[in-house]
Amino acid sequence: MRLNITRRNPFTIEHLPLIGRLHRSSFRSGCANTSSLNRFLSRMLFYPLKAVSFWQVPGKLKVRVDDKERTANYDARNRQFSALYFDVFSDGYEPEFTTIIDALVPNDGVLYDIGSNWGFFSIHLAVRPGFKGRIHAFEPWPPTYMDLARLVDELELGNCITCHATALNDTTGDAKMQSPSHSGLAHLSDNKGTTIHTTTLNDLDLEPPTLVKIDAEGAEEKILQGGRQFLTEHHPMLLFENRAHRFGDEECLKVLIMLEEIDYHLFAPNLLSSAEGLHRLELISITAETRQDHAGYPNLFACHTNDLGRLEAAVQSD
Image 1 (tube, one colour):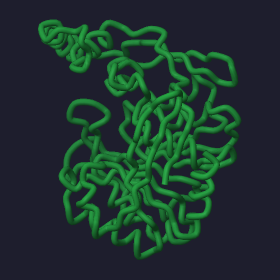
Image 2 (cartoon, one colour):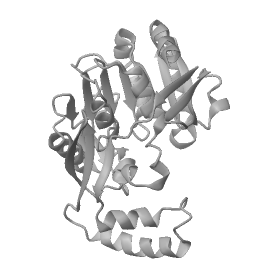
Image 3 (cartoon, helix red, strand yellow):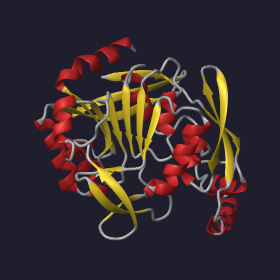
Image 4 (cartoon, one colour):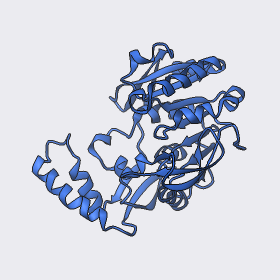
């Protein structure tokens, strides 16, 4: 089963401040034009500069919306903005995610972006030509939530993106959260860190989603387990991390068994190529039992039995 989607990158960096340029130079291991010495020297400058950057370091990005360009400031201290300027992302950031979202969320659809960080996927969909649906972006880490809310406001996308400063989990209440080095690693913690609010998919009072994307640094299984009733009732398509070697074999397997119990089919997304302006993505059918045979795929896609026809239609239309 394959999806073919026209490549789309609405983002452009208009101004990359020094801290961003040093970050880019420090980690350009795949760039032949950057020597090991230059990377080493860049890191020697980057880390001290990052340590003394107590206030926002403004950069500027542009986004194309309906054939017009809108600009917004971003805080270059958040290294997750490297999605816009690292060489390795020149063909797109996590194109298996954007391919599935573009192929399966219709123009009037609803996306839950759980663990949205500064909003790459939310904004990417919001500015898609013809999109008139709704996006709910969940980002509990306070500094990153500010990045997200600022961009949505400055890009004038509040009419379709709603930002939620909360974490999805298997319980509703308060929890602790830590971010050891950058916002992409922010995660729930057992007993120390910043206090944040949590809720469950079951307890949300929002319009049902077409697709739920989850990237929550190990909380994916708790989020899905805490949403069993929600998933049984609404059966949205799911796109989520499932890294047994990183987050635990038992937890990762248990949630796949639960999804199969409520009639979900599991797939491993495999990006085949990115040629002639297209992203080509293969959806490899797997089961909880065969998950370990496809351990090299960190992200999984799940589709309820009732929606397999819609999935097949999306494949045939491409």
